[in-house]
Length: 152
Image 1 (cartoon, rainbow, N blue to C red):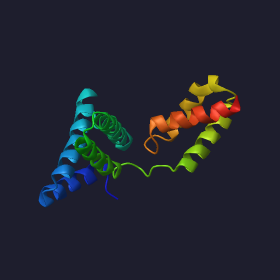
Image 2 (cartoon, rainbow, N blue to C red):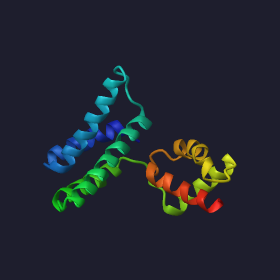
Image 3 (tube, one colour):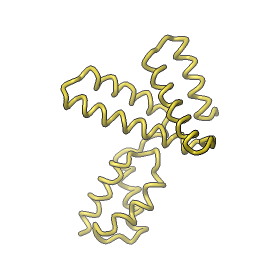
Image 4 (cartoon, rainbow, N blue to C red):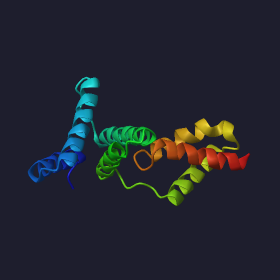
């Protein structure tokens, strides 16, 4: 199977051939963000998990932008951001369902021996690296808070 970097290159060429401007600009944005991270890290080539993290950041930025556009009643721009999010998610690992996320967090709470909301940090330290790229940080945090709130 091709690496994520190879997939991006191949999809970029396909988008150029198909004259798909949205896909082309989105993939170029990913490649640019990856290159920026590499330069920032003293020209160190990013590995797969690091590239996935860059894409997760891109998705989060677009979600925030879409929310701002909706609040400003700019539905056209919000739709563009939503389409870009859909394109970006193709390159991410399969996202966990709500049930899977809940089960993983329950497991982490048990491992951490968490008893209350005070243990939020220790649970997050366990679950965040484990679910990196499979769920958004906000969704993880919200679910941890919900489950810890039920404990007391």
